[in-house]
Length: 276
Image (cartoon, rainbow, N blue to C red; front, side, top):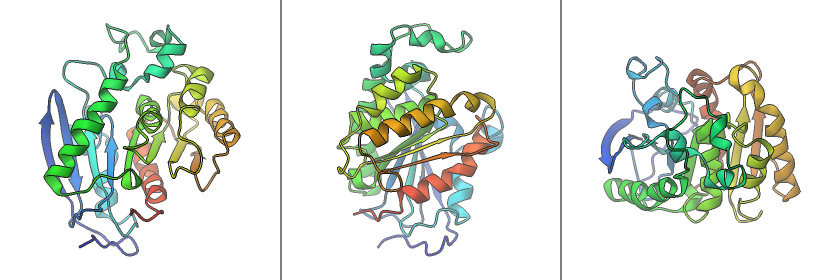
């Protein structure tokens, strides 16, 4: 049976958590899960599904609120998978796309010194393969969902936005859609735009991409590259509203409270094409 959510009807989630290797995985499940339930894999799991009082800054993405409150209006509600950074590594090592590091060798020096990893090497390929070869099969096994890229998306903000676009290009047979919030384009600037957009699948493959940005706080540096990414997508014949969606949320910035407000828009857009 498919989970029904006509007109954004409220629902009750089940929350689950387990560990794979050195990564904690949190999962939010709709009331009803079937073989064709969509799956959304998200980076930075520590600020996604935990209650606000348990997060490092007292904020989260409001995912539980959005799903239980009916803000996601799709008939098939998704399983949301929050992947924490591995205990023996840095989020910057895992999320920084290797394709950017290859063309901008000193790109790790753009990371503020107080959070810059000691070893400035991208482990993004290993991390993306971990998502594809361990996390998703485990979700399939535990919850009886059949894996298919047409109903599997990857998402994140900031460096997680870069990682999501990278994952769509690196593993097109795993992920059909990427949702990139406040993508941290200054990590490589125009070279990052070229490296990630040019590696995406060819138009007509059914793959889709959501791009957004605010215009205050750290996000104030993003719109220039956001529009550059749009132009590059269109040069590759990706069609807006069909293959990609790109939005600027004026007056918003680089915090979970802003991403929480955008998240239902992006998820509803992803799920607007009925999973198969």
